[in-house]
Image 1 (cartoon, helix red, strand yellow):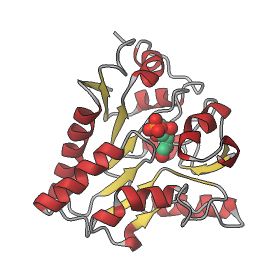
Image 2 (cartoon, helix red, strand yellow; image 1 turned 60 degrees about the horizontal axis):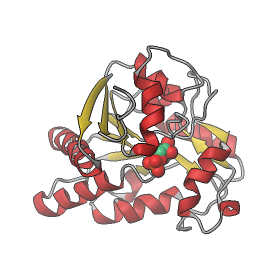
Image 3 (cartoon, protein in one colour; image 1 turned 135 degrees about the vertical axis):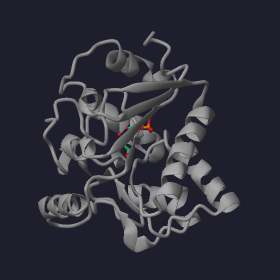
Length: 243
Ligand code: F6R
């Protein structure tokens, strides 16, 4: 894993955006693995800025999101589908038919996981996967203890994760208890992975990730140590305990 230490959130966003933009310009039919949450919002803003200024086209790009809540309608402002529309898709020219996000509203959730995996498997892995990291080390919604050989599956969200995400909801009770997430094995199929981390809240988990060689299912992000092309772009605060 290569670690790029940057000053702050803005630098993290701008460096990550340059990598994505270069990829899309050199490979216009790139497959991008995308994340939600607070971490990638600045990166998405940079992509939008570049799209408006330089016209980088997403017409042939396909996107695959990591996860979606169970039981939240795509039109609901709390769904990850809505988040992606608001923060990225509505502002660039990626065709809707090329956007892929698990559907957490279907009756047969197992079938939906299989459908999503089949969709991912039809490709040879995304070109670049963007990841944030939970303070418990989760990637996607793969909470501690998730098997490293997992594919898309349904998860029960850890209470710490529900609390961390409650900031996007009116009340903690409104935060769903389940989600569909790409598994660790699905994530590791990406050709290149960018893990972004910013702020003091991520310092402890970055310390755990970076100060030992241990690869342990209790720290889902440690699975990334098995991948050949991972770049961590993290700011000074996030790396403050990892020195
Ligand atoms: C989001 C996702 C999660 C987040 C993680 C960090 O699609 O898969 O793993 O990346 O929870 O969230 P933030 O960025 O809000 O700190």
